[in-house]
Amino acid sequence: MTFTTALIAFGIITLLMLGLEIMTTYAVQGFGFGFSANRGTVESPPFALRIKRAYQNQIESTAYGVPILAAAALTNLQFGGAELAALIFVIGRAAFAMLYYTGIPFIRVPAFLLGTLSIFYIAFGLLMTPMA
Image (tube, rainbow, N blue to C red; front, side, top):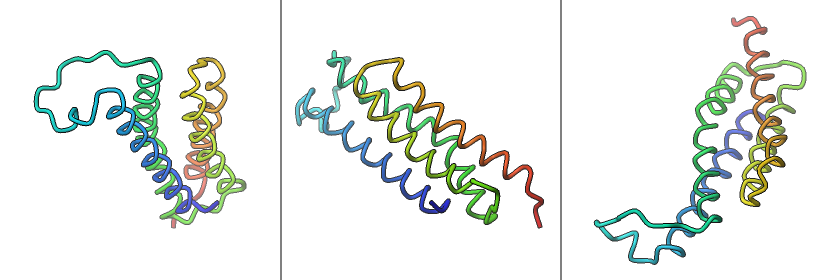
């Protein structure tokens, strides 16, 4: 997977997660919630909270994933296995989101590590490759 394709795929996953988070909010709070100026604290069911937290985690992963993938794309990084690492990052993030929705805490850790370690590998490739 090219770095540009990985960025696009990551963006699509994030957009789908945002859509799910919005739809879940409307399902739990009612359609009028989106138009209300008086939004108070409302209890949400556990599944809705997991969806919200999974999306928040996805946004946080943007802080380290997007700059590294963008730098790799802009520099046309040619480092052994870096494009495979980009694919693994996207798969790891998608798997993490799906596993987060299940509510089983320990099973999502390998998917998180898969995504995060692959970004570290690409960053290492960027640091080791001489810039022209």
